[in-house]
Length: 188
Image: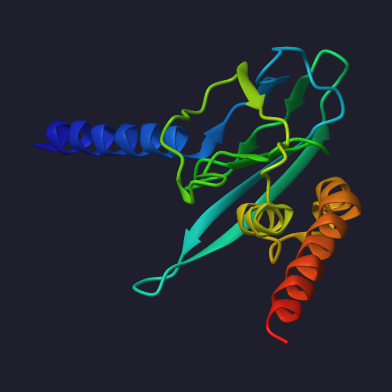
């Protein structure tokens, strides 16, 4: 009887440890960022990764655990450290480079739908599309600010916010101003 309790207890502990390790460890993240059309590497793209954890009972919320960001090298490659904490969610990944449509692991720009074509694996290739003439900077700026959860860990997202605020924000504001002048001018 005593041996049976020891065996059952050992099995329970082993199962909990396997679940703990499986649910907490994200290995280092590596990848390559390329131009979707040419396949050439994109140097200087900002790669932003944010690990979160769901908290609360009933009315759950998401809380940022760790944020890391790097720039791609001349070969378009990046390497980010992993995050080793219990019960952590798969990290959110957003990639941005001036002149390209931002890439998000959660949403697809312009379609306003959840991304279903992405699975986490190290060494993935991320294809960024170039900005086209039909591109809306105002919509893209909204997409970026939604994708990166700007309310969390803002001080840790310096490269990312600087990169898109310097160029993208100015273009979005100018586009909005032109639309407003055109709309109000036609109603006089």
